[in-house]
Image (spheres, helix red, strand yellow):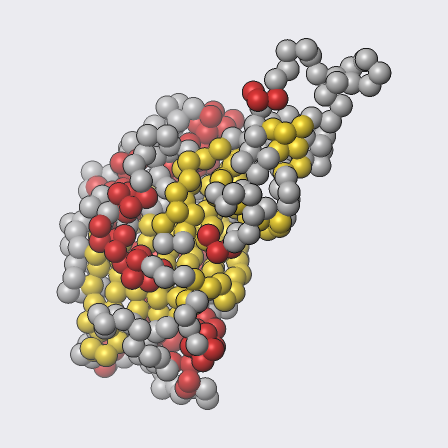
Length: 427
């Protein structure tokens, strides 16, 4: 992890602090992204303040991951450690995982079930809603030591986040004046999440990986339908997802969320694939286990592949019958942690659950499709870090930032990300 500079620490504490080196976006607007954005520790620290502590809803966990009173799940908002708890009466809380005494982490496990939250350093004890419950040796020993007479337990607690649950997903924010999650998503985005997640869920498996690139490069990658069947050989070879399938891109009103969708049954082979003009079309392979690609029609809209992103760092994916949530967390200016949660529905039969588990092999750290994503963004990180004054070029599909419901040979969703990013960062 790259160490933050003294200026970046200032930027993190004060979102209005200026950068030590002035930053100006190229005149071409969101068709360009300055390479400096991926390697500047001051900008990275400013993002922690303006985005992750700012007016966004961040995905924290799934409600089904903490089903019982006393359950907790640790996560982060940006780099800020957070713990999500279910209180005894069933209400879910999100708290900064930092003791009010010396700042130590309070919850050390990924998940657990506890009666209260206890800091191992000095045994400060908290209720599941973050209120301070007890302080060890508060009254000292035999009349000596202890806290001052004016010390009040109620003045010290774990910092709370505002919490809202939508389609089984727990979201949190540090912004008091932000609207609800559904209004943050907008109607089209909210309805598509309801399509995929709007019924009782079952967790089928999880894993995570570290990728060595700035978090925004992965945010771009998820929105980049242009690369999907050029880089990912498996997609093209086995006709899981190709640009010549019927499909399109939907952007939210603010452009920073998106949906990319394709219909496997509707494909008119493009010249680039037919004449093997791209490397991903140069293979004539077969599967020893063709059952991997079998699927049942789950929805009446014909969509067999979709990637939906929610700014800043959430993705809901649906491929054949594999349903998953991806979310990613910055771990430094050039390091990102990527998490995968594979899902089914409570109503699924055993056969359906087994098929979803089998199809989960398509994605993930060693997935047949997404294996390449674990390294491609590092190639960009390594290629751009020495040229902060240069910028990427993003004019595939034109220069506009708008939905494109007839084609996915476009970078409109990537431009949408940068439009939203510029707005919240003030660039």
